[in-house]
Length: 247
Image 1: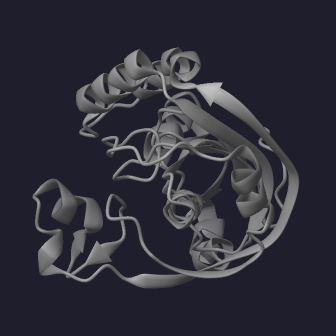
Image 2: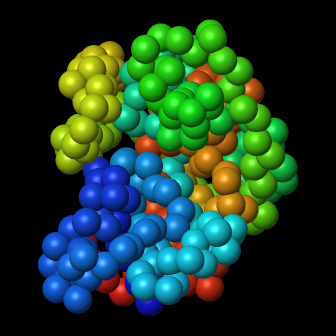
């Protein structure tokens, strides 16, 4: 059986899957897996495979995906999203340049994988190397990340003070060791300074293995103003376009 589950922001895919198991008696003791990871701060469609369908996991990992992403320019973080430690800010972002960068995302981007991710190097997830301050001992793997379509680009100026309550609330929903206290404090400090930022929202279609937050960081670095992914919602995985189970 293939189930389409909505993963809330703040939860890991494993937490969403286990919550589904806990409230579904038919899944008690049943082996289940999910296809396609979503970061804790992201939300949206998660495929859950049970029974014989779980043996088709490799096939489902190769599906392309649709997302609605909100990029924030004028600030950056070490995780490339809102859950990381915020970096020193560069110059103020230009609204037109930021919108143009997102609109031009279609194509292949050869980028390193985010250091704060679950991808394994020498048998250990990258986030373990990062947490221990040992990234200098390894080389971050590169990946060709392909954006096949960009739609509905909308850019607007925004202040950090207008974002901090929502971002902090989503950080508070994250469980586990993700440096939540430090991230929240960084956002509160940013809000107190209240620099001008630019938010750009767009719908993207990407191939399997594309990290949308890596695209955010790369655009911000290229523009010289910094960039991160402040919100992400997955709306389609291959032929599955709607979550039928709420968490």
